[in-house]
Each structure stands twice: as structure tokens, then as C-alpha cells.
Image (cartoon, rainbow, N blue to C red; front, side, top):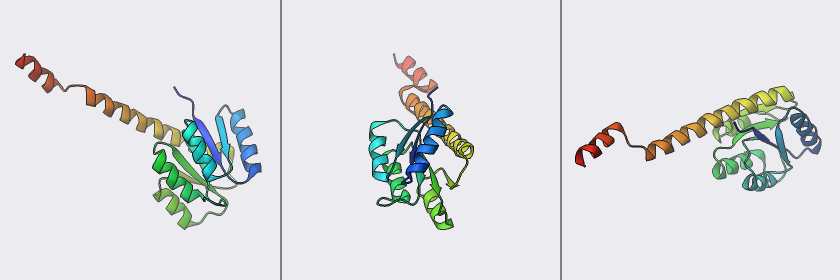
Length: 151
């Protein structure tokens, strides 16, 4: 089974370095990006499963980054993270495709629980896609019988 790969996206360097160290210590492959644009570049090069994304960042904010991630990489699960939570930004993030929403400061175990749930959601979706693709190539019993009777 594939191991979950996480990317932390935040303009706060201290949060990135501390959280990355804790996640790596717990055995998770973790990358970081200091901006939305950097996160999108990394996603083009690496297979990332879960993005933990800060809402408030200079330049491309978290909501704009989320929308772009979902447009370019629809299977990537995104968890929004903010120290400035408002009901409006939470609703907008969830409407735009975020899997969940966390308040800063958050415990690493809470963050990991949300990430694990999002990873399981992604794996279920990938399995559905594989099954649908497999069905496209398989014949139904009716088609097999029809093909045998015409030969």
C-alpha cells in the first residue's frame, strides 16, 4: 500500500520547519512550500496526496491556491489551516473542494488524524476509478453469451 505524502503550505517558516520535523519523526514523507505558487510547482513534479494549506498568505492566498489545486490536481485532498478562521472562509474553502478545516495552533496528532481521513477518502476514490476503468474493458455476461451465440 502506498504511503501518504503530505505537503505543508504556509508563509510562516517556523510553522513549516517545526511541523515538518514532527511529521517526519512520525514516519510521514513531508514536503513544504512557502507560497501557493511554490505549492503548485511542487505538485507538478511530485505525487502528493494531502496538502495542508494556510488560508492567509501574501500573493496567492489559500482559497485561490485551493481552487487552482482542485482544477489541476482534482485527486489531491486539501485541508485548510488558519489562525484567522472566519465562518465565511471556512464555508468558501469547503465549497471550493477542501476536505476539512483546522484552526491554528493545532496539535500535530489532530492534523494527522484529518490527513489520514483525507488519505482514506482519496484511496476510496482511486479504487472507484480503477474499478470503473476495469469495467470499461470487461464484457458483461450478456455480451459474452451474445458473442458466443453469434460465433
